[in-house]
Amino acid sequence: MTAAASTQDNVLYTGRTHTIGGRTGASRSDDGRLDIALTRFGTVGTGTNPEQLFAAGWSACFMGAMARAAQTVGVRLPDDLAVDAEVDLVQGPDGFALAARLKVSVPGVDRDKALAIVEGAHQLCPYSKATRGNIAVDLSVA
Image (cartoon, rainbow, N blue to C red; front, top):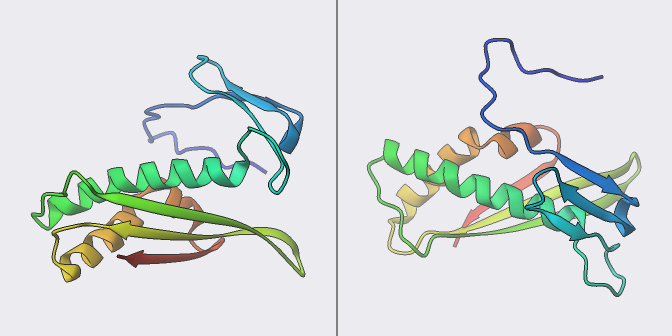
């Protein structure tokens, strides 16, 4: 049921949260740095939802992976680098699933190099690795 990290892997960080109430509840990290209300999508409320949280986490992680990928091709990423992430909750014949789009803006970087960096980041990013083969993912460079 669970997949443990290899005994040879070095755990760098573990994020911990406690969630109550599901999509209409709240979630708080053990260190208190995250303390959010959850609101079901399409309803009135001030909370966020799992899809937005996943999109935020993935896009932030992806930008870190882009920095690593850019080093391998000798490119300095611009300060105004941006990733717009969209995560869909979809319902199909087998139930609910996710689909995602990452739209990357790399101003001032040659398009071919930007594409190489994005593809390299997709190979490096832990979120990309976790979703690979499990959900539909579309990558694009603006």
